[in-house]
Length: 246
Image (cartoon, rainbow, N blue to C red):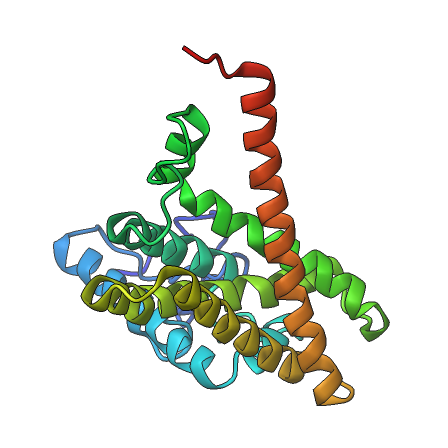
């Protein structure tokens, strides 16, 4: 039975209304059971309008277009970019730690220290750090585009999430199976990421595509440089001020 009032906000409902005109909740809200929970879970991840799997597929071919349409107002059509980044970065971090691809405490030249141990367990924080940095450099490099910092964050979140998917599905398996030379492999991975982000920028911003592509690549390079500087500075401060040699 349809209630005469919305169970979410209390607004009056007409018998013909399927959704509350005030908050948008379904009018025929019923008691939860396992079937309803399972349906909602599957719907959230697979629905054509905003499912995460649909989004991943679209981000393969048109990352900048997806981000631009979200910024321009097509919010219901796509999975939320920040929720997307949070979910897939968390998933990729587990694989990253498990694969041993990025270890801050594995080198023999580095004495045991709490900084390395923390980064080994919370590498996801470094990935999340890249998102605001990317948006910042894009805001500076594309300042004439009229895109503000928050809108640049949308592009950074979508593409960084897709980068995590790429790592989880391709980079980590190759590393685990073949163990190629680390630094050449890392350089190739970062080059692929820079090209992908540059391509996304050609779709997101108006203007000459070559210029947008190069600026996008520069954003990823600057982000990587700043990340390395911040990590190095953290180690320097620790070993300079707090580390006690035995």
